[in-house]
Length: 260
Image (cartoon, rainbow, N blue to C red; front, side, top):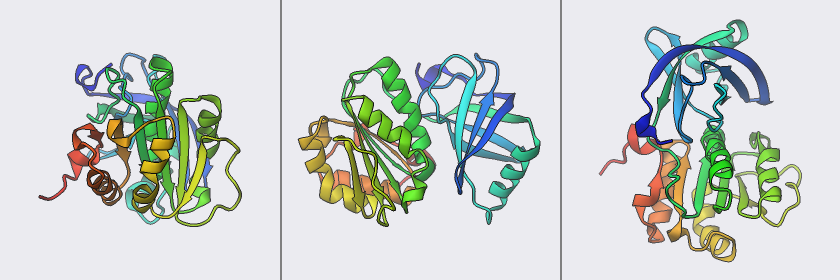
């Protein structure tokens, strides 16, 4: 399924679950007509807060054909839209959504190893991509890097570690600016790095990829998800390593183009 074959639709869907994933992130499960909820891995939807306000969120689940979609939503109490959305989800069992959007989608025609780099709830987009790869291209190598400020922000740590333990073609690199509060799960493809993601990439990426399953980073398809500052800091490092920017993909490139 490609992004170009899917037209954007507006529909009302059911809120079937809201759960805290950590103190600052909550998961939302939505259900709608399966044909209307179709999306490509890596795309996002928009939730309607009012007639003038639509808020985008990466779809955190690959297409399963059952009309069910997962979201990972960062709660910012000080931000008006975030507080309004949290209040809405506490009382509403239906939401109006617009989907799918976004051209940063998994290229299933490519067999190149995947380098997935996410910060915070940018993990949601990568989760959908990993799920799609496991279903459609189960042998395709994946190196998943997930950056957060501190350990508790790795709200899906168990899932990421489980992928690396269960699948020989997946490695998980957790990156936190502060030390871990306890060790990550055991696994030869599970690694922790302390520092800022772009600086960690600069010092560790080449060694990790050349010694691991993915070969040289220049041979990868690279997907990035996070703030514009984080994404472009990583892109700068990758470009300095001589990596072809035509194989880098991010929604940031569309909504926050880098100034020339």
